Every structure is written in structure tokens, then in C-alpha cells.
Length: 68
Image (cartoon, rainbow, N blue to C red; front, side):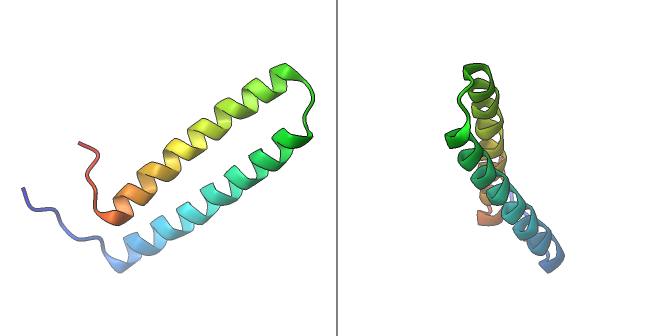
């Protein structure tokens, strides 16, 4: 099954999304190192995993890898 190549607009949108997710991951990592409360660390770890999963999906789409 042939896939349609991404348009320049789609690529630009995905690159912007990728940059936002990377910034969110960086912020989470920095705040996690400053956090002492275990429940807050657990919550931030969950957010970090979700952001990393989203980043992987965006990068896969940019690389032309299907989610199937």
C-alpha cells in the first residue's frame, strides 16, 4: 500500500510539534530533578513517558513510518 508523502505544511507542523514536545520533556526532566515529593515524581514520570511516546509518534510520522 503506497503512502502519500507528507506535504511541506504537514512537515512544518510536525517539526513545530516535535520542538514543543522536546521542550516539554526538557522541562519535566529539570523539574523532576528539583522535586522531592514521591507522589509528584510519580506523576511527572507519567507525564514524561506520555511526552516521550508522543515524540516517538511524531518522529515516526516524519520518518514515514506507519503506526500500523
